[in-house]
Length: 96
Image (cartoon, rainbow, N blue to C red; front, top):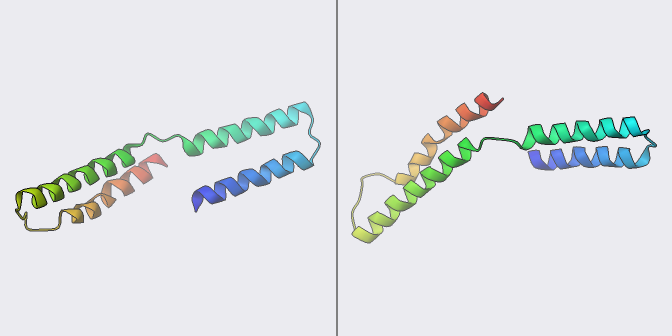
């Protein structure tokens, strides 16, 4: 949803740019502002994605081991995904 809003706002800026007659300085300023906004919105460290990926790999390996070696660890390993919400919230607020 957020990506759609971002695309929509960029499209509106593009329409404005195409409809108006800008001077060279104004068009350069608009392009610079748009590039700055794009950099700020897309550059992330990816730490939260790495945490989710590692947790999913761990859960998958435990599930495979349970099926392959016919044992039970006593709880559903996939419930650990709920614990991943805590660092996700932390990384979200730290990144703001």
